[in-house]
Amino acid sequence: MVLIRIPKPWQVIDQPVTAEAAFWGRRKFMKSMIGLGAIAAAAPLTACQASTQGKRDPLAGVQDLNAVANANFREGDRPITGRQLAATYNNFYEFGGTKSIWQNAQALPTNPWTLNVGGLVKNPTTYGLEDLLNFPLEERVYRFRCVEAWAMVVPWIGFPMSRILDAVEPSSDAKYVRFTSYYDSEVTKGPGLRSSFLPWPYTEGLRIEEMANDLAFFAVGAYGQTLPKQHGAPIRMVVPWKYGFKGAKSVVGIEFVAEQPATFWNTINGNEYKFESNVEPDVPHPRWSQATERLVGPGSEFSWEQQPTLLYNGYADYVADLYA
Ligand code: MTE
Image (tube, rainbow, N blue to C red; front, side):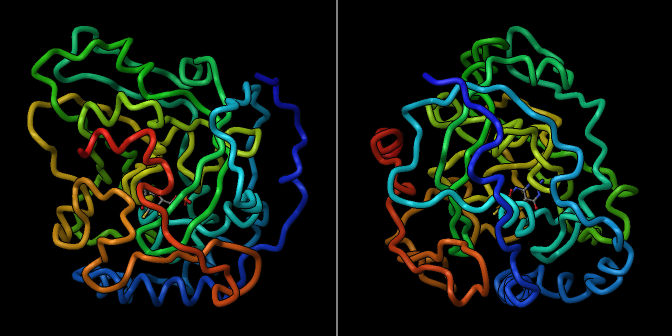
């Protein structure tokens, strides 16, 4: 165990993603979302860009964090994604339907913050921002795989989800967990995908055994510092063996429940976005293969490195038992 020091190599400025890649990302998004395409098409892309001029620093407002590097979770094969790139190529539909939402996301109010944990538990608990940052923090380098077949490698800082389980003590009736993201239609007014038939707020869910798994993590930081807003500040889920949409950002609620909860994408299109949504190369998305993925790198999306998708995103040793 080594105390990480700042600055890290990833603080070297890398080339931000090109407008071209963002454009193609948006086109892919529009094609990929049955039922959502029409709304994405209506998203006021140029209006958003115009209204956010002057916000030039994607890492504005982040602060240093001390964390212990967890030697069990270092990435051996793949390079860590450039920090600027990761912070400027995001999905956060509350703030727009493109990958270039980082400026709009600066409207997210993250301090103070309240995370309510309740439902079928012995000790319902409310955490404030300081409580979350005061958990013993560790750094874990995880592979990240979006259902859209792009991938990154991110050094998260945070704590295992099991710490919350230990604190609140779920009852034996609790079989599932629902995670709810921050939502305020006034804050996302303009840039967000606001259509009244979308099931806001963004929600996600896990089986309780999945939440208890060693890999399941809450990130409060990345790349040595607190999370930039576009990554889901101040706290977001990271479940690296599942597709990225399972990792709800800016979590305000955790509820332990008896039945499988409705979730955002599964409600929009349950055929394409399953509740379980593990990374499985042999299980294609209904409209594209998941056998390979593009590792996000500087420059155009078309030059990103193609690589095979790994079962459970390479974490079978940790999670295969859950699905035996
Ligand atoms: N959480 C919320 N609240 N809203 C979102 O739109 N997008 C999901 C996930 N969590 C999303 C979200 C998707 S589709 C992905 S791929 C990841 O966030 C992207 O995380 P990143 O932008 O930090 O890389």
